[in-house]
Length: 164
Image 1 (tube, helix red, strand yellow):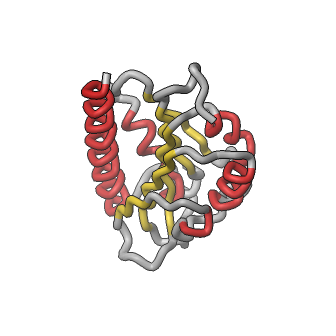
Image 2: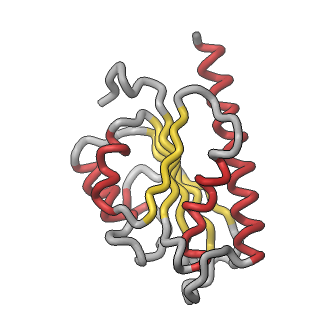
């Protein structure tokens, strides 16, 4: 349900554990996005491994862009954008979070979350060492994701301006 307080709000939520190298790529992408001018109504959030505490922010947005690492069978460094309707439509993301993205989205959808949800999944090697920086291949994919998300946010903002 959209209220006046969340009308038009886009939440860009990066997920991952930054202590596990590439597994934290979603957080790195959100941090990079925050360094750019963003359209009005866009909120970036470091979701870390937050689990069900993220339900509130998800429910307060009209549009949601999630960024997470995935072990989906694609070559490492692949950036995939999906707009699935149900949590079981999402590619397999990593499970180093308190709960998985699918579990979080199942609860979100059950509680009436019918918003526009987009997932940017970045394929990584699931065997990650403890390290607080991205591998070169994943850093390149993170940069690609940042550019694609910025372009998507700008295009969405332009469409909204035309409707006004």
